[in-house]
Image 1 (cartoon, rainbow, N blue to C red):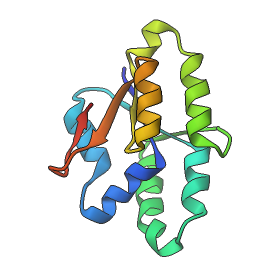
Image 2 (cartoon, rainbow, N blue to C red):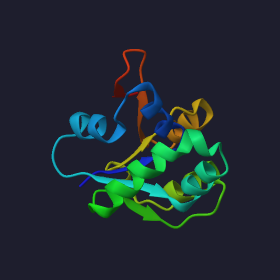
Image 3 (cartoon, rainbow, N blue to C red):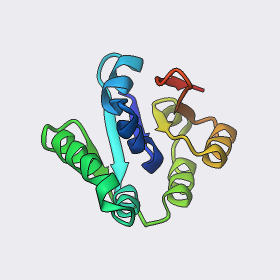
Length: 128
């Protein structure tokens, strides 16, 4: 079952009317494990509460439905994510996908052969 890690910046697509979770389920049909880290939540908490209020409601709703897992991490999400992917076996890498809009992070993950999903100008999420 594929695991999709959702980076902090992706959640702000909700303010543009893009339902990230629905987009991911459309893009990857079948069983799917959606994941964020505690570091992502920490980053969101450090931002403007008016901008993150909706995001936290959505995260809580999906977590309560059992459709989103929160895993422990440190507060430096990009660094933690690179280290996390370093510890994945080759067969695990094919089922681990990162959803991000961070250019530098995408470059680092591509070098590690981690699949990436990112927003496109069409307003939809796509594999890059």
